[in-house]
Amino acid sequence: MMELSKIKSHLGPLSYILIMAVLGVPIWWRTTEVYRALLPYDAIDALSDIEYVTQKVNIILITPDAQGVHSRGPEVQKLLNSQLYDLSLNVRAPSERESKVLESAVSLGDVDEEIGKGLAGSVPGAVVLLEAPRVLLVSPSSLVAGNYRTIYFTSATPSQQIAAMLMDTVLGEQQMSRLWETPSSPASSPTSASLLRKKSTGKIDVQLSLLVPEPEYVVASWDIKGAVHKYLDPFLSRFPLHVPVNSQVIYLTSLNIPGGEEGQGPLEVKAEDLALALNSVESLLSSQSSSSPALNLIIYIPPVHRTPLTVRGSKNNSFLIPSWGGVYIYNYNLPGDKMIKYPTSLELDMELVSKIWVGQLRSLLGVQVVDERKSLALNPRGLRDWELDYQLRYRAGENIVEVRRTLESLSRLLHQIPNIVITEDIARRVEMSLNKLRMSVSYLKEGRITEAHSASQSSLQQAEAAFFDPSLLSLLYFPDDQKYAIYVPYFLPVGLPILLSIKSIIKAIKTKPKEE
Image 1 (spheres, one colour):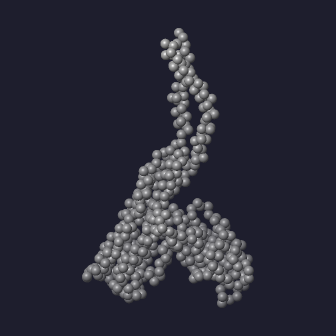
Image 2 (image 1 turned 90 degrees about the vertical axis):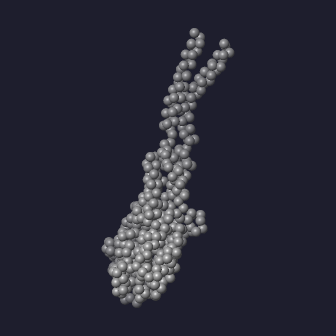
Image 3 (image 1 turned 180 degrees about the vertical axis):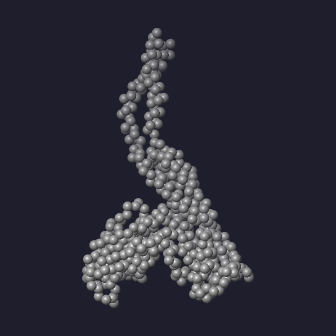
């Protein structure tokens, strides 16, 4: 009877301990754990194995030599050695129609429009090497890049020069190799062109601003809508980015140019001084509400007492600020002009301004500068077909490198901080980013540069969306020690009696054998 009463006295604590162990602790653990969806960490780690991507390039050599001794093809083939490009060379003689056009053409521009436009017009990434009559080129051994995907040479042009223009200018092998270098490598040091260039995940805003510091003297007007439609849209619509254009006119705001306030008359300043002077108006220029990176293109009309204002060393009175934008000083009162009576009306020459804008955008968006003697005059679209191909290749590779860095940074962050929440949406974005990355690499190897760029852009957008997801910060500032500090006051009053009960039960079990 005595033993039965002792057993009953311990049933209550035992049942309470059982309920806490079976239900209480699991429920508490489940409700307080940080949810972390599974991520493909192995696939992210494998991205470090992508040192570079070998891109397929189809090259067509058209030369009458193909019907004779056939020496030009093997010479060029031997010189086309590259680690970054899988170069496939096909050699053929010009067709009957092509021969007639070459014989009757007055200029190389006519050949480019009649033949070059159709040779590889529908094959992005392909390059054509076309032998032209010597009379069409400046010198017998000269070499000229066309506006489409054709390089023109003569029978006297050395094969080494042909291969050099193909690899260095059209395919941009040196710039492409720097892209794949690690940041710590000496070869990865940025060049002047890369410093100018603006990076983007697929969208860049362009802000066009007209600064009129003295509207009481100069009443300026500009046909900005017509200029954008006629001159900028043909260039921006071909570029592999989404580039919305905004415009604004800012009055009563002048640049604080060193030495510009003292004295009067013509003034020549350095581009560095003008770049510093822009700091005073930069807050007025950043009026776009988009989170995308922006480029600012400014037209500045100098004050009356400091006109003409010229930029030292500039042929067109403009200058660039790396990764920020460009400025053009629009002088309306030049030496030798008739005396102007103020106030005066000024209608801007938008054709002149737009040509300067296109040139500035080409530099700011990373289009290579080509020697005028080695290329045909730029077409009205502002972008040659082979320049567009290079942009697709380079930006696809740049996106792949950026995706690798972003996902590797995300993986390290999630390993280092275990209480970051990983939602299913983040996991889905990471998976999509990896899939698009694989597609982009596969497309580049096949030479499908348009699809490769599109896939790489989607991959980068998904990777950055995952990395900057706001849900990652939900428990970032709630570490484990704070969790214990919150729950201990709740569990200690309940847990202390349970611990004492467990102690008494253990003591009763130990004393039972002694009594026997």
